[in-house]
Amino acid sequence: MNKLSNKAALTEGNIPKQLFTLTVPMFFGMLSTMAFNLIDTYFVGQLGTKFLAAMSFTFPVVMVVAGVSVGLGIGASTAISKAIGEGDDNKVKRLTTDSLLLSIIIVAILIAIGMLTIRPLFSAIGADDGLIDLIYDYMKFWYPGMIFLVIPMVGNNAIRATGDTKVPSAIMIFSVIVNVILDPIFIFGWGPVPRMELEGAAIATVISRAFTLFFSLFWLSYKYKMISVQIPSYSVISGSWRRVLAVGIPTAGTNIIVPFAVGLLTRLIASYGTAAVAAFGVASRIEIFAMSVMMALSSVLSPFLGQNFGAGKLHRVREGIKISQVFGVVWSLLIIAILLLFGGNLVSAFDSNPEVVEIGITYFSIIPFGYALQSVFRMCQVSFTVLNRPFVSAFLMILQMLILYIPLAYLGSFVLGLPGIFGSYVISNLISMIIAFSWLNGYLSKLESATD
Image (cartoon, rainbow, N blue to C red; front, side):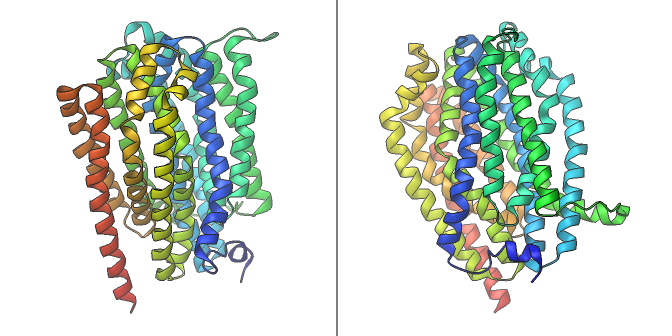
């Protein structure tokens, strides 16, 4: 075996133990990423509900960029993990290098579009004139800093494709530590640094993210030797891009659907007032933090499935999916209990406004009942993406968010108000989970029959 194949021994051994070993460091890394957003939310919350609402309006756009980053990252990780499973080191290096180059081109386009559309975009989402200026102060720094989000996302996913989740997690944790230190300094001012409020939050984020770019590229270059310095022909590089984008485009599209839907929901919730938007923003961040274990597991499931699918070991593919789904349900039930008991206290830690807290309690008395359903659905999505059916994954997300969730949310709002919006999440998750679960089982059976 070659060097990279030895490092990525996900095609042999105890499956539960492997997934657990991969997930634990990834969990702490993911936890730190979620903490990143919560820390920003906490310090901005000290400025007042108005500032928190302004930041909440940026959440859908931030998610769009994150969605593109995740799409490119998963596209790279899927292609690279399959190449590792096949034992082709040259292909691994070429795919890694070309994926990073592609991310540079895409992020340059995103920065240009973002800077030109700040005011019209957020006005369209529903931000009033009093919030637009605050949003502009934040996004004028955040947009150029996208280079420090997108490129490291691709780089860290390339590292994960080898089966190493410790290094990407350590990189993310270090970035959070830097952000914790810089946030209060830039937001409230300290020493020679003036008080910059939302501008300061964005600057702190950009600086801390810059460290992830440096360390991920350093590790890929000097530890794993996955960066090629050879200048490829157009046919070679375009071939790499096709492999990455075959998964990356539908995956990015799938991930963009979520913030697009959240943008529509934010506009709907904005009709209930600034406090409702602030509560939705805080609760959403707490929710992502609570479900970081599931996000970590879905992240490591991708290279696990990719390597085993590349090696033709479908029995390990099916077992890995099953174990992930069962764990997702168990973890979600635990989170339900915690948020039902302490959801209000968690919201009040970010904003003590009684109206914000009351809406947050309503949110956490309904929304968590959809978590277990969402966990199973998410594992099905990841599986379809890695098993060469990324457009099925994209369709399932369209079904869940645009065909089910958004129409049901507007109907629920009309009938029951905010509780109706929140209840639509549970219903849409139930229907989409049943469809995804049945579809995936049928597809796995078809693959197994074809190899018999």
